[in-house]
Length: 77
Image (cartoon, helix red, strand yellow):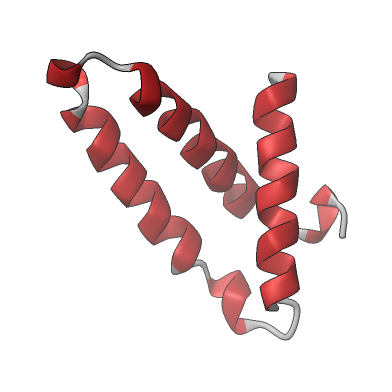
């Protein structure tokens, strides 16, 4: 699957999830609350996206989405 296969908002939210997760990993203890809340909100948006209710929303598509989004965050896109 390619990045054009996924809705732009879903791909954007998954990439933001990885970015936020990485920020949380290096954040000082006192400044983690906002990042945790953002991570929870992004998790809700990704998991509850209507795309997953379509025939294209397979378990393999979930893996592909994560791989594409992770590659984007590593590339700085």
